[in-house]
Length: 152
Image 1 (cartoon, rainbow, N blue to C red):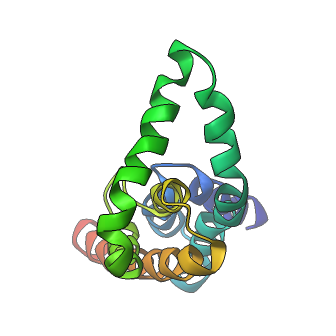
Image 2: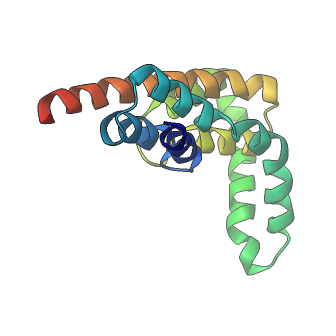
């Protein structure tokens, strides 16, 4: 039980996979209960986010200094600077909805990256990311439950 729980927690921490993989693996593959799996997946998904928001910008700026290697990092930083003026009014809802969409490339990690590039503080971005993760968890749980009913 502990090892299965740890798997769900760790899978949910992985970028791109996040809780979109943790919930189906926990409920369908590992046979854990829905409440336990959802709790572990949400915790695992949110655990790295404060660290990303606090230190991510410094990491991006550090790697942006390196010639050709720094090109993608400079691009990410410039993208945020260009978009911040346009998005300021709708940032909370935009980040929430973006994180809530249960597709690869969206999610808490990408929401944190958006927050970093837009120079948002923790108190501005973490509530939207958390609400997005909870919304995504609800959607993925319903999909996993329906999938489980029709296939098993």
